[in-house]
Length: 340
Ligand code: ATR
Image (cartoon, rainbow, N blue to C red; front, side, top):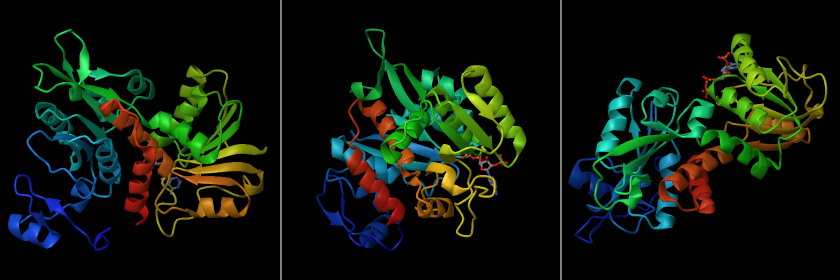
């Protein structure tokens, strides 16, 4: 995005003056983050509330662009920021946001597992999938209920960090809405058994996939995921190998494809593309990985991971605002941010 956006407008609260990027940087001696400001017509003022994403690294996160577009479309006087937070400081950073009356947080790599032990309460989604990617700060109301902080004009005396997982639902929503694929009763191959692979495999097992094939570079990790699935979802047939039959879905959760020179993570000698119905690649940058290019050419239905990113973010925004997320606006902002 650097050097691409040429119109910068910032309204300074109380002055009505509009500054360009150069004059902002000159006046304040600070780099001007146009992605935070550009979507809003209303200025930041003393009542502005904040959300943020914490990551390490975080500088390539598309969440600020997506969430600020959504927040702006809903008309909230909120802003969504991004902070580079080292895992050693995650606890302090969550406590800090709580103390400063933040509305909520998103957590990205490498914080999602660590955050489970740092929040004050876990939603069923976080307990079930074992990771927290969204925190909603909640106040203890006079009626004795915990309510989202957006409900309070004054900072309540007692605030808690409530942890949710919005990633898992985003996987099946993306398969359904972007690929037209319903999991129940189908055969699926999941490539990768890292954090994303584990959640994806468990989620499609929970949704009633009939046959699940798991392949990972290091077999031990795939074995651990398989054990968890067999224990929790005994109706799912789990195989730690490529299928020898035709398969409805291949889901890539590995990082292979992120690099410009990366090959496809799929061993086509073990599973020819002609035997595959649909391919979902969690990678969204590049928009078309080698895997997706080859699968499309072979006639498979394909989709990249942008939808997953969108749906997990949309759900987080709904948890914070209590309103339906403006999906189209958020999708456009995301596409502009990621693909330019
Ligand atoms: P995430 O939490 O996003 O899933 P991760 O836990 O680092 O990230 O998992 C990345 C996945 O990509 C893992 O399944 C990893 O395989 P290993 O479990 O063997 O590490 C997989 N992966 C990464 N580089 C790979 C490569 N060159 N070939 C095959 N798989 C690879």
